[in-house]
Image (cartoon, rainbow, N blue to C red):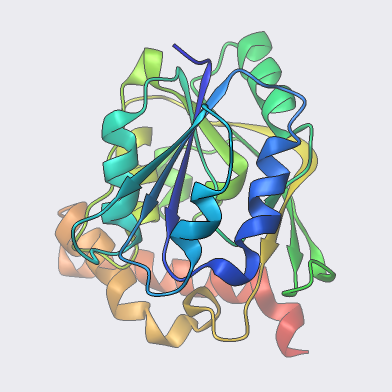
Length: 250
């Protein structure tokens, strides 16, 4: 079994896919498998992946366009590595990402860890300050703001099992992390910047007003909170989200 499994959903990602692939192939830590699920792309994403001659990469073809959560779940089902981590098809890792994260998790005996990441434009130029991994993450504080980004986080499936994504939610990553943190006491921060997140102009994550209802449903439907409690956490999440990206609006 490989030490690490990388999970990537792909949908019409040809514009940045080759750069993302290069960032994985350039990792200093080499004992990994990469489970890439194509979510019925209509561009040449599949052809780009098929050109790679590396036995560690497994391409999975979804039989429907089910969204990123569905594609990640298909990859997770076939993943066999101990350490699970995620990389979207337009994001980027520095060469030391896997080595530093796995070393940190083993040294600190932690089930979950996350690092800083750079917040960049489409050309990977910094837009605002790096997001800082500066505090431990618990279930309680993750309710108010999602500090865990898929591209800079990792968990130990040998100790906590695999955690799948709810396929009916547009906030599937937040629900997944909350469910994971029901099992473990804390996720630990590694304050090093080893990943780059592309902040597209049309990114749904930047349009907070469009997803307030979806965030409310994280608490109401998936955490089974009362209406009042769900509204309370939605308000906290919205306020913290504005603070997180406030420099974009100055």
